[in-house]
Image (cartoon, helix red, strand yellow):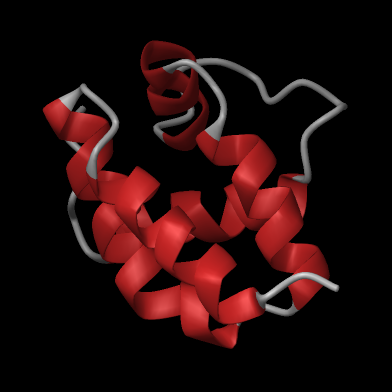
Length: 91
């Protein structure tokens, strides 16, 4: 059985410490808002997103590049809407 509190802590850390400051900020604030609300399946899907390359992920969540079909568009869409609503993204 997966310890969801441990997974949440791990994903919170990885959201804030990615290597690219822009992506750290975008995902970090998103994680603060949403990780506690995610189900286990959503956490697992979010982990797949966090595993992506920084530049690639940044392009997806700022809508510079189309999202590939193998990603959960619901969660990436949620991140994108969060970023746009909070004016954290620069264009």
